[in-house]
Length: 471
Image 1 (cartoon, rainbow, N blue to C red):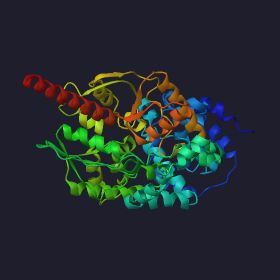
Image 2 (image 1 turned 90 degrees about the horizontal axis):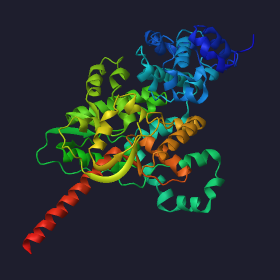
Image 3 (image 1 turned 60 degrees about the horizontal axis):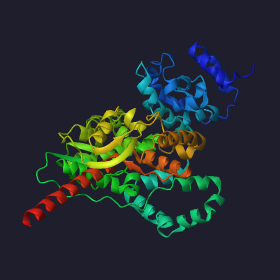
Image 4 (image 1 turned 120 degrees about the horizontal axis):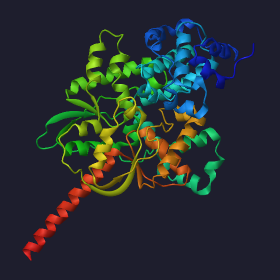
């Protein structure tokens, strides 16, 4: 019997004929990556896997299913594959793992699922088990464990790498067109080069009478590439009465490691972060990177099997707040500054889907006098960044990026606003490829500018009034 085409498997799964999918995957060749026993941790999620009722509500929410129409590129299809792996019905072959690896982890399916399947946790478990079965990648370990997880090493590497832009090499390559002569993989990495020349974080002075003490997650990529976004977030928080407590021994939250399947490293970083923030003794940990916030809110689950840490992890996770969430819950003035600009807002997946934060950012933007917020089509569809996805799955990432850029440009906005560094980098790269210099701003940058402009204009009006009175 020949393998049934993957595009025809959607109806087979819907009708419960799941054996056809397994047969098709076996027909693609064994090439085992490791023993079935390696999926012991995934078997812990069997009850959650079996919550799926195969209704298909997730299909139209899934970016990779919408791109391909393939059941194996849908949450329902992937849940079936995970269930078959956990029960030992199929082997963890490359023909199986490729479909799980193509998942963005955007968790849009969770918001659409009527049965409450915790898909994000399940796909992370599956990635962890596949990574454990596969040969270790020395390069990945060096980058994630040796560089990203170590703030001082990351800082040194970032400063060295920034010379590519500081010395004008990048500008020269683009001006002469030599960048097009680079090998395709290197050319892709060049397009995703982070803005390492942006200013680093500078903590503002505390407010005269703070009503709460909060810590700001500095993270990894944000720390070296978007430090000025941290500064803007801190300035806005201070303006509304929050004291920003320094936490010098914090490091990466572990989100990139968990997304890449390295759950052991993610656990180690979670323990380090929990201990650091406990010592700070703050009212909340404020996060301005959506992916980090979503991951930190899952620390309790990540360390649930560790008796020494599970309660501490759950308590810390409950104390994590996205910056827009924290501000929206604050007693704010009716007007948050003044800024004449037409903007469109892009929902970061791990803010909208994973944390359920959609209205707060928009509410804050609408309180800026003179700012026109226009909605883009499919604002909550993934842009294709998804941690390291735009490097590991370039074809899918590019398709999603192109769709997102087209949606942004259709709004005729002066700027696009987001709440996650990966999204900002992916969108900026896509806009540049389309020949657009449209600014990509973090929401706290918009608020900080609006408040600063308002304060400056107020000071100018006051000084002008005094001058007229004196004359």
